[in-house]
Picture 1 (tube, rainbow, N blue to C red):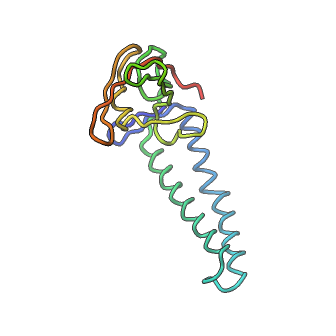
Picture 2 (cartoon, one colour; picture 1 turned 135 degrees about the vertical axis):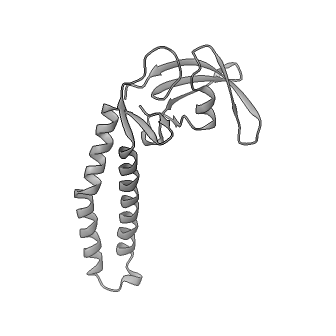
Picture 3 (cartoon, rainbow, N blue to C red; picture 1 turned 45 degrees about the vertical axis):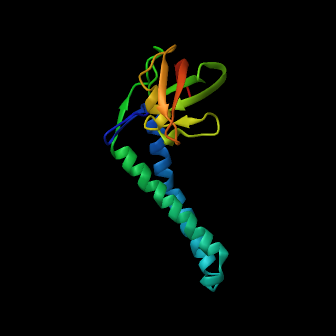
Length: 165
């Protein structure tokens, strides 16, 4: 679903529609809701000691940051197709790897933008050390990437299938 090349982010039509709907909600109904919360808290009196007011203002700040992130992302988005089921690791694929040739020590993750991060599956960006190491590799191939301590790790690609949501 996503692949960043310079400032362009590639999205499937489904992903684009999902992010666009989130932006429309945050820009419309959610803004109205938070404005009402702030106004209600303001009516409670002294703002210096008003926890509800400060919480609502913090929520508003986070919401506005997300609106800016989504706006920028969608401005630079190009809609494309989901990746082919050809066993080549690329953004939009669910990838299973084995660490250092140990077939029992595996990790399965979605290679995609952090916009797709969820509790269902771990997400690695194509720009992350692991993501850039496995990107373009085929099932059965080994890939190397740099660890935070500067050492190099080797993994074997066990599977690469298009993400189905």
